[in-house]
Length: 511
Image (cartoon, rainbow, N blue to C red):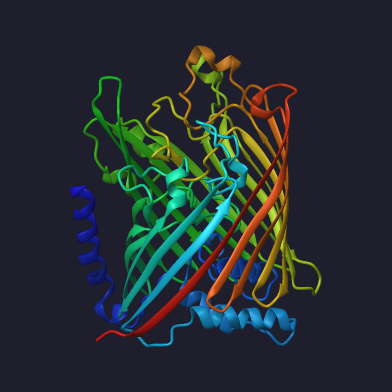
């Protein structure tokens, strides 16, 4: 903890000195639009249908200022009246009406009812322990505060949500209904950003969960540093994972580092090359050589003689009337087959897909296929897995593949409907299982360990914005074969949720 705070202070002092005070003074900071913000389904629809440009492809969340500029630059002359009014709705909600320095405060209260407490209906009966569906009603209240002054923005968003008490992914114990979805300080300038705090991120194609950086973990505090220009960015993330104990009862410290080179050349393409590592040990600290973005974690671990679980990935997107995208990650591969240890199955993950619009209609579509191997994320050292309180920092599951087709339909201004068809195959592998022994490698599957559970999901989601009121819902049927990984067992499950939220906001200049 002391090392992490010292690193934050050092960077906060050194970076402005290197870039110059004038650059900082010329840059107004902007808060991020969270992935769970009510406006994001509309934003993703507008991007998929080509109404607005994606400010940062392969990267979420978006900065509020960047998104507002994209909305203002939209050519709304050639779109339908429904789309045009939706653009104005989102722009009015997000645009700052006061010059910095200013504050914005938003209060929200809501009620909900659902057949399950977990966030994604596709989690049903998956993971260890399996997620079970239990019908409940929930209530929530939150206060979102933004302070913006010059190049610095401070955000604090406490939320009390009774759903958290029943969510198997939530790690809170004493106060198990209060969370901070966003709580951070960010210093931004023309050549980069220095960030510390909690904010859900997603590296990879938008609308698809990233394979190593996603919105899965609750409250993962991290340090994020970005340097570069508008079309080339170097990003580094460092985080301390939850401390666990080894077989002797000694506390084991665990750390995660990630770095990425993001390139958006003129034209239609965007690329990102990234690498990451997880290391752990009794007394181990945040070892700085793993934070060097100009090296590969695997090589540095080999050179220093330290054990680290390393990952290497590549993301790509080509924008157009039909936008194609992909994400690829290699966890472990054995090239030779000279010893028993070389028989370890390859561990990897990938996603390929496309999105666009249906002719000139206000209808967007997205189709993707994703696959995660059986041993992906796991390591010979069972504590060197990218899990935060047993929740994946990227995907929460392994040993599965999934194909999803989704539409987004603007039925009227502020009313977005999202039909979905998903086919999911889940093996018995899981990131929370112990890594197999060398003697077990011949019987360990690369993909689909044991009996494969097959699920077909037919669903309809909806978002409706009426002034200060927001209504969201999602309902669908799961047709399950080999339910519970029992050969021949079948099940049909109905899952649904509905929520109503009232929001009120105020902003003004800071005194």
